[in-house]
Length: 186
Image 1 (cartoon, rainbow, N blue to C red):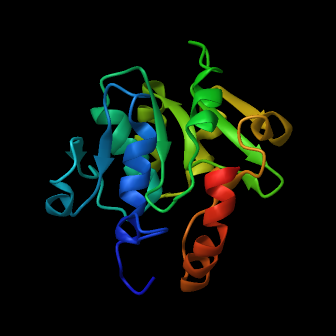
Image 2: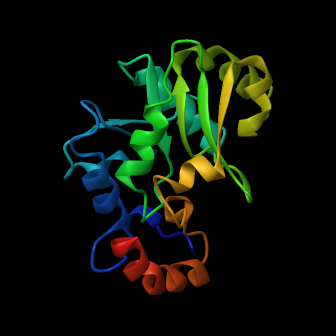
């Protein structure tokens, strides 16, 4: 996106960060935002934390979020998902049991690690991986207990799986404006 902070892109006259913040309202007692540019986010009522490892990767964000979270488990998402549905988050949280370290949606496009629930027990395996400079999220999964939520089950909470739409390119951004009606009605 040419260096733009995707959280501040407006989709349907609302920034993605505002959309996510509104989605989290009423779901969580604590909302953490992991960013290395904290001053940009002072307008929101949330806890701002930064990465603890110097590696630029979503895995460092997952680690920082878990490290600073006060609960035993945390729902983790990316800042570029404008259509994340509360109902989908609730469906994932409903799968919480003490034995699970990761609750991950799996669609025909694959695993969705940036829209998943993680346990604090993931911190050590993630740290080990980051110390070895391996930023791949799914690589630590064999070291923890993972529950996969299949697409069919996900569709009951989000029939069009629009929660997993993310914006990585100008084309994605353009398409998101066209999807807005589907997102609001679906």
